[in-house]
Length: 435
Image (tube, rainbow, N blue to C red):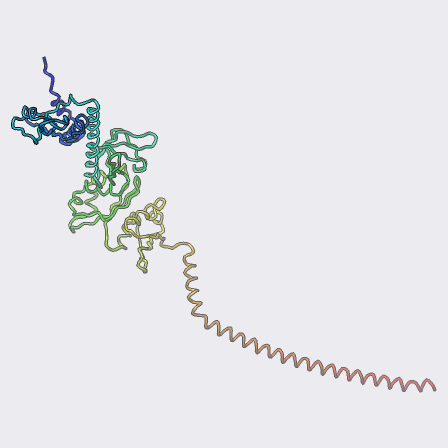
């Protein structure tokens, strides 16, 4: 007949299994069990928590003893022991010393056992939290390979297993257009680790720009060895990424090292990102040259930097490549601006409609300031001429009035002389009739 295992053997087998499955150290669990035993003794022996718990490695047993003080007359059975009873345990015991009495967990009350059991369970949960926190912190701001365990059909959030820890990948931190299935192995970036009453929580993402940076560090040994350095990354997840690199060794081509033989290195990264396009650009300390390369694949004819010292520039491109430089919905110039840290204005070689008129207006405005004196002189001359003409007109009008008056007087005199002649003729005719 097979002999049943001792409870202690079952205990240590359970602790070994927990350590293997959950990663919780057996020593941590032993410490939690010790606390549980002390609490159980306190509840069972009138508040006496003077308990010694030891793990006997030779026997493979967990031993616990309740310490009592040796006295002549016992007044508190939970804390004191008589001299005769103490010497049965330890023959050399004397009054005033403490003697440890071995405990049997079977003698604990039901409430004490339940309390101890709850404490052990809580210890397991605390151990899991500590293990998860340690797991997260070891991967903080780094990439990990995670397994998709569940995808919520309503929210789209994915539950991932990161080693022995669990994390949630929200829908908005997933690559747009990407479909995750249970069992898929994916790369995620651990952005941050937060702790709360419910335990530690890892903030993970597949859209963070540093995910691309870490993937290049994995695939390109020159970056890992600091021969090639990544200066900046700009990314619109699921669509396009621009990355600027520079070589610290003149014999090493930074762009070529990132691309790899036959494009294998960058090809692996593209496949891990679901087909996202990647532009690898050589970094340059000269902002003009850096901006020109950042706007690739478009050819840039000229870049004019703002003379006021602000990080603003105007890039001129051939008319045929204006849309290529701007990109779909402005994506190319937007990524270039993030990559370089400059605000970039794109203009065609022929200029925009109305730019020449604006320039002419500016020149006219400047010319108006220069011609003010000439216009003033001309206005003064015109005014003087008008005054002279006014004087001449007045004089001519006076002469005309004088001539009119003379003519009127002469007409009057002629009229009077005619009337005198007529009266004389009438006088001469009257005597003839009488005759």
